[in-house]
Image (cartoon, rainbow, N blue to C red; front, side, top):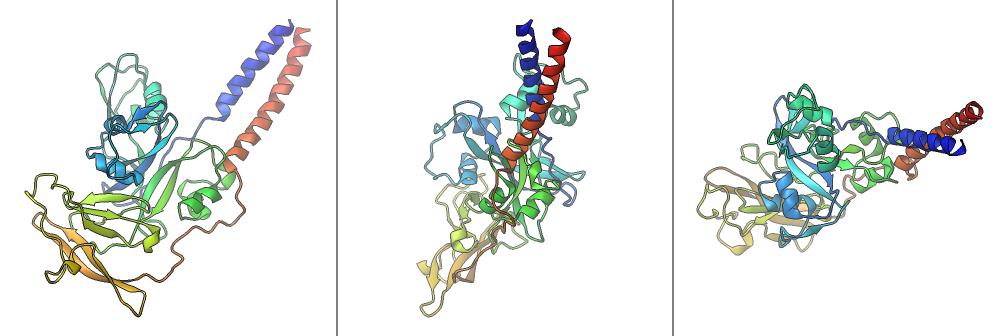
Length: 371
């Protein structure tokens, strides 16, 4: 009889513990113009040891260097580079705003294999970035238990294209690590706790949960790209780089450059095949001092003049001479309003205490019932 009591208690504990760690669905608000698109990022936590080319294939990232740039990896990184189990990597993708919500623009698409189920696809293959109910909804599946081998499923990754506090940003779906807090995340990614709470519909920091997909607005570098350019607005997040102008130009963003976009000729062949060779990219004159990306600094001030990238069309790459200040500046960093603490772990501990109390009561009742 004593074993029966213990078994019932253990089963009850497992059920409650599983329920307490359930995550809210990752839905990002996107109130931008209907059907507008933008570049977004989301974390992927690999369930198994894999290689970068497999990640590229799973998320259908057309250009390998886009995956490298989103993570700030060296351009020499090999597609066979190993990614360890539980290691996170940022996935770049195009976001589309529709009906007040942002989702990935009809990609990635997953092909159902033998023994697949929607829950397995959502939770195991795509690391719970979406729920199986969301996959069923966007693919018009009335019964989530009925999918067929070979069926192609759109995986709607969460995202947004909205400005934040009047500034253009790159929205990043950050998977919260156990032990993190809203203050810590805000500090690391250059925003504020208040902004994070507002964006994610949270009333207080104690609601943060481990493994939650959190909408984090990343600072985008200021650029000289004009509104007539085919890549406008070119939003490059701090710590990342992108290839643009048919891969002829490489632009990177760094807080060390006062959040001013730094662009130079990429040295790559044009892609797609719009151009046979990359057009010349230089400012006024023919001197090498005026090539794209070259910088001259005034000897008496901390101002510098750069041959900056200003956009492209199907025929040309445009540049402009931009004078910028390199004087030290604070930059748009986060302003935590309380001391750092582990909101995610505290939320889990509160749930654990209530579960423990409930289990204790249930065990006492069982003891009287079975004795």
